[in-house]
View (cartoon, rainbow, N blue to C red):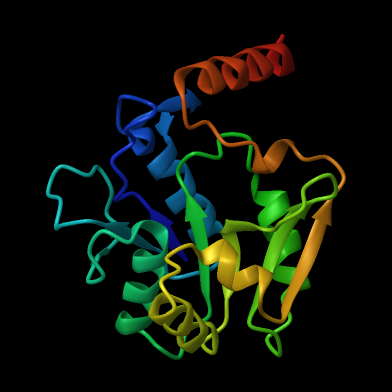
Length: 191
């Protein structure tokens, strides 16, 4: 698994990987724990070696600078080109282990990737996706065309979609207003 923690979190105004939504864990800690609960060797993607990250997971330093998640995924393939990488973002506070187990069970290694997609959404969620080894060449190809968005590659490749009727697990918290909405949902669940 590759947990993306190298973003600048500009819209949120604070590091999204260090936010806490429940049980005292940061989102980074929670995502690393879910990767490990799936039995996966779990890495943290960072823009530069970061001694301050509170995790014992090994770090993969971004070697495709300034390309965001696309560069992070390519950097993971440089680390291990034969691995299928389950990519997880730190801005998905409603994502639970059961959804990830379903994704892993639905995996189709014959495809370029297996991705979650909300039934009301036109496109797959690129940051909760299993990228097969063959995805690396596709990611580089799209990069050569000037596209540094993994979603663009997914839309134009052979991808299996696990469609979610209940779309809460793919709700992003990128801005303070989204974070507050998700915190309110979590409070309602526990009361």
